[in-house]
Image 1 (cartoon, rainbow, N blue to C red):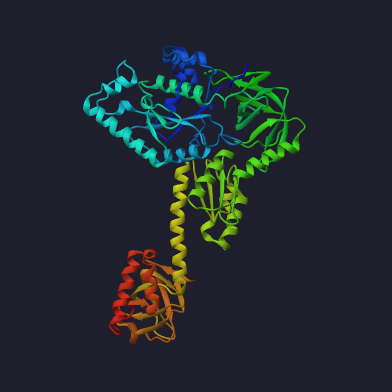
Image 2: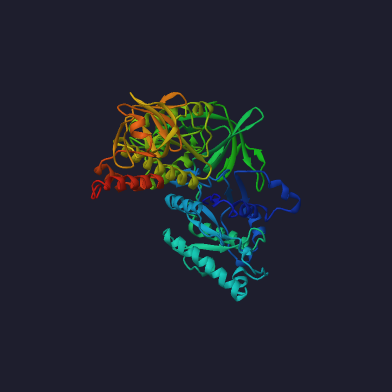
Length: 578
């Protein structure tokens, strides 16, 4: 008889929409009161056997569905990576996903990112429309969910209808047809929405029922257990003096006596024996030693090989076939980690996270020259510094869910580091930075030709009358640079700034609000400047037109000064700058 493994189900969604509460509901719904406290610590996966599912969801027995699946393996990855760092060859590690959306808030940016990645990985998913109890006036009854929804007060029902229809519209925009689960005839064509409340537990049995039904009907062929053990390393955890690797075995049977090959970032296999093999206990955070374990399940291993294992990396049974395994690993990693000849540096906490990050960067037309797993280090900063010469816009290192080491911080000067635990915020911050940086680069290019500047003469600070005249000025707006030609408020040419001093030191430039001393050869302060108030940078008519064309790069104050310059110039030549 064909053996079927547990479907792997991941729960994902926007922060605060109730992802963890839904997971806790699924886990705790069948745990007796006395044990409830046993599942409080952060765990990466929960084994949920069929017997417990039937207790949690009486609808299974009532409906007469005969379930062949042995249960579920529920995944909850730490942080906001959701399921993105869970993948295997050919797509997502998850067979099914539950996307949690707060019915009152709808699709948020993070939800949209999750939908994109579900689409990319072709992962079938359901939507838990959480927090129905937050709809003002909502009443819970013991009727079926459908009857309970229909029996709400007309104004409450109207709010509910408006909110779920808005979500249907938004999903349509993402390329998905969806409807309330009890209105769907063909689940291969529409995404099922299950209204629920993690707080009151309403709709949770229906959610379990839908997971069972869809797994049974549409995943059975995908769930046939293979002979070869295959898995994915999740994370390395330190316990006392030992390093344990938490992993998911997603196919086949693994024995303690097996040798395994784990991929590294270059696709080279790390060959190692297993010192300790443990399996997660059903609905528990405890592991139990095993001689042999069968997919799908959560395992913990201590390996003989001390080489650093990277999160998200695949592993297979080693049968003296190193070259074949190497070929498979390299194909798998290089296919998904593609970089350009030029671009930014990208780092993430696992292989899957990195793939998700690269996919979203590509979507936003941001090229990547180098990608890697683990913390941002000195080498990443050196690579980004090489970009300063080629394209300043690419002198950036982005990190998804990773820290920055101290050596990198020490040499960070001129390099922008952007990190976040939430992938959509990371992308958002990077896009904003690139917009600002582009403007800055463009402005620098524009200002290389000349600069906009208005100076107020500080008559109380005259240090030398002539040869050259040295006196104090305040920069009212724009930027003062040495070599700048100045004219006065009547359009008379004054001369060229030879030197700028700030706090007794020569400087190349001075910015708005600064007070500095300037020297201008060929000027007699008493005769030419004593009764004048302001000086301006002398620009040509074509330079003025160029500034006007790029006015989005100028500040409001720079625009005002530009206008003043034009008015002064037009006193002598009416069509100046037209």
